Image (tube, rainbow, N blue to C red; front, side, top):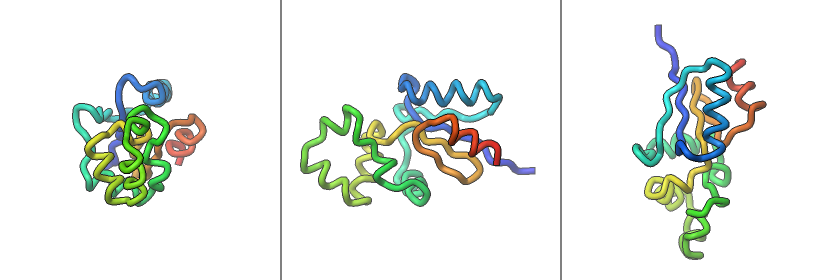
Length: 120
């Protein structure tokens, strides 16, 4: 019998990632945590996420990493290929966490959305 593994991608000290991890623990959901800093996502993985999550949601434009980019780099990130390369090189530009469960992809964390993902 094959079953999908739930994965949570993020950075351990991120507050939103902590909230998601706490929610998963409180709800008894087993998952594999993937630390962006230790194992950055591949081009293929990010492209897979982008099939389900719009670029404007996946690309974190609120963080300090984004703010440190030049205007030229920010403008270039409007192009999906450039944005994917940026997210591979600087995973902090990915909105966290990214939850992968049974073929669904969720970016960010809200309890309502997680409840919906896990009850279906």
